[in-house]
Amino acid sequence: MRRDLEAVFRRDYSLVAGVAARVLGSPTQADDVAQEVFLSFARSSPSAVPADQARGWLCVAATHTALNLLRSGRRRIAREDAAGTRDAALTGETAPDVADSVVVSEERARVRAALARLPRPQATALVLRHSGLSYAEVAAALHLSPTSVGTTVRRAESALREELTRP
Amino acid sequence: MKLTRHPAEGVLRRLIDEPAGVSDPDRDHIAACGRCQQMLAAVRDDAAAASALLSVPSTAEGQDDDVDAAWQRLRGSTAASVPAASAAADGARVVALDAHRVSDEHVSTARSTRRLTGRGAWRRPGVVALGVAVVVAGAGTAAASDWLRIFQVQQVAPISLSQADLAGLGQLPDPSAFGEAVATKPVEIREVSDAAAAAQATGLQVPRVAELPRGVTGQPTYQVGYAGQVSFTFSAAKAAASAEAAGGQLPPVPAGLDGSVVRLSAGPGVAAVWESSAGVPALIVGRAVAPTAESTGVPFTQVRDYLLSLPGIPADLASQLATFTGDGSTLPLPVPADQAATSTADVNGAPATVVRSNDGTMAGVVWVRNGVVTAVAGTPSTDELLDVARGLK
Image 1 (cartoon, each protein chain N blue to C red):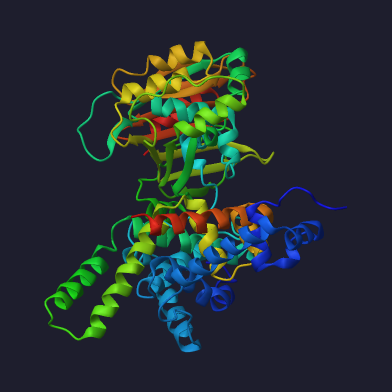
Image 2 (tube, each protein chain N blue to C red):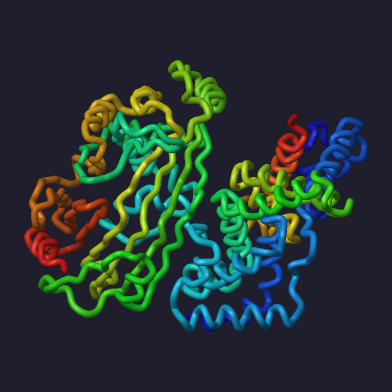
């Protein structure tokens, strides 16, 4: 067990859970992902993950774990829930605000599907940047130059737009 | 000095977030250039759209109470010392370092515990060759499914690389020149306290040495690695562009190969390492779930023939790899012909490959049984290593 675990946890937990939530589109499973990531960090040795690199490591780990979760199809349950709500809305059994929430939830699902289809380095850089990490932090976490971070994030945003505007 | 070229889109993107990170000449150019202003507006729109799309509906950013509760939960998990959190996100392995190490995990456990980092690993000719080799050595037939199993290691056999081969491999293109390699499940390697912890972390039976060879003493350290996976997506456009840039021509791409994906998986694995007084490993006993390769339904023969026809694969090597087509279960182990000699042996009924360096300083024994590859390597003699191999419990 790492001695710096609690200090790192209290410093970075919210950020890491936020990264996972950003990928998953919901905070529901983000806590589980954050727990798994910190558990892995707890078992790492300080030589493998030095304390000063912990924040970037944790954020990358949270992104990958959440993306894997998206890709593994375990989001099926959420989709089925959404479909159930939509069916209810279509049959007029629910109030109009439920129909609105269906639209929102479908868009969220499309965004996550698009995110999961992006090349992994692009998706990771995109999520890290939009989670508030600086270019220098993203660069260090992904072994890129700060200039490449701009290029990678730009490509990801452009690809996301193309994915979502595709008929 | 006035900048005449237009800065790249990545620079425009950074200008939006971190203007101070953009050089003065670039900033001056963008401010005065109509085309760059237009592009900047488009980049800004996309950035704003992405920000909105990736926003989290109700904040996951915890209050102090939430963090306290989460901390208590983690403490419970670590105290239980079981991978409980993986139940919450099963199969979604956490990541970390050395993304591509997986592709030669079986070799590195036999040779040493050194790490290969990031994309650099792919640029190492031996790893590139091995990646090609693992793919090429697959079987031609398998049940139709979304993912076609084309290769599962059941035994290891050396292929000899001459100096000319090695020189040729040095000219091989980086895999990113003809596709995209992504570590879909990057590997984390870490040290654990003892064999029990290693077994718990990997689910493997950790090999126990019955009797240490002369000169090897003390307790080993244990390294474990989770299962890892690398996906390679072939891109005909990228390959053609790279070939053109190199002044060559790409062999005709078979129908269906463009966009096809080959997925290499390996691990988890464990290695017990006994250090010598000189600080180098005196003995390494490693065990890992043997590598497999799968593809998205492209006929295996097309993948094999195409990869072997790529410019830069030495003809000698290609002809050896082309023989790995029969049973689809043999892992080629590249061995530099001028630096090491190979032979075969029997380890309790399993055919094993024995490699010994010509200077006599290192040797190794590698074999596969029931989809698990085991390696014993180090400074003892071949006979002593075979004794260790045969006596493993």
